[in-house]
Image (tube, rainbow, N blue to C red; front, side, top):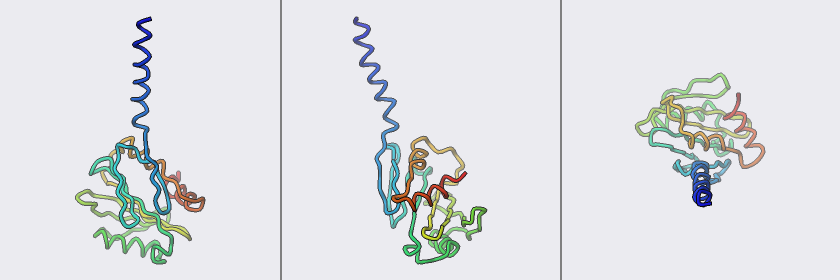
Length: 161
């Protein structure tokens, strides 16, 4: 009987410990939302949302309507962004987007720009080619559009196979 008395609290604590990494706070932004685990930090600035696991391991995402992006073509939007970030010249990618490298503080980053008729997205991540920590990957995997049209665009661009 005494054994059961000690096992129940131990079992409950184990369940609580296992559920802690999964705790995440849903955060809503202009065109999308995501579940951000407590192990990550989030900063939003000028429509760009940066999620960090560490100072060197991060991703930044921004989704703009064509109007919010100045009605620029994807190429021109990427060129303007590359200039702002003091990055390399954008090059065309196989998926119809544009890509360049830049520095995010002291960290080398890859930047991708892709759009459709209604939206343009900028996605930047550390260029370390390291596997992301579980919390950062969970935040990325939870990104969803705030309406069906944006969600369809994000699913096609972020999660295309």
